[in-house]
Image (cartoon, helix red, strand yellow):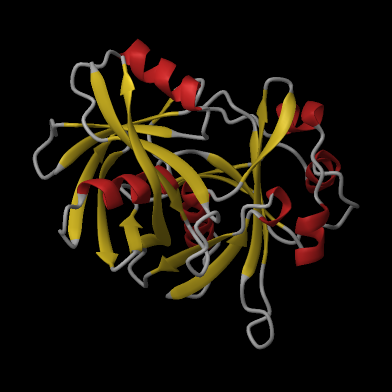
Length: 285
């Protein structure tokens, strides 16, 4: 049976068709088994592949399942925005049903914005700041504020660094990342590092997301769920609100990406990015 798919890039920069994070979206996944969805995600070998199904919960327009090449995820940012761009069909707002909850997505042209399905859950980090610096291959004192586990749909380790240069210099150790960065809920090791921009001269924050895969450390081009968790970090550490931030990611892997983060005064967390469709086709399953 033929199943139509589209390839889109999410969190693109200034219309660059090869910027952002790639995503494969299967437009109608009815008839596919869980094993087939996982096999297709492994076949395409992108960070995530999504599968669109009829909704099962009141208030949702579509049910969306998200698979990495190895497992299913409850929520991820670039799959949410990219899938919304495929299924919206002229609508300015769609609600996507995911394992993490109902995620509303709105659009303004080629720019898409999601609101997280849940308030952030926050946990302290067992590792010391010195241990986290060693994990990242950085000198002592590089961690500039409180590191936290944050979960607005997908739990991640959020680590603030003292400068953009330190973010760019980070070179995590696989062994130490597996030791200190393994999520208690996801059984996966990762670290999201970030540094503030200069409001007057260089306002964009610089961020990087590392995770372990097949015995090595891999870097993600653009991580919307971690962007949302950075919003959760702002709430947990009582930063001044409201706040609107632009994040730059993907420079080190030659996939420049731009993400928008907004945290409202009432605690709502929003993630914004551009989406460009690159191609489409069908897969025989």
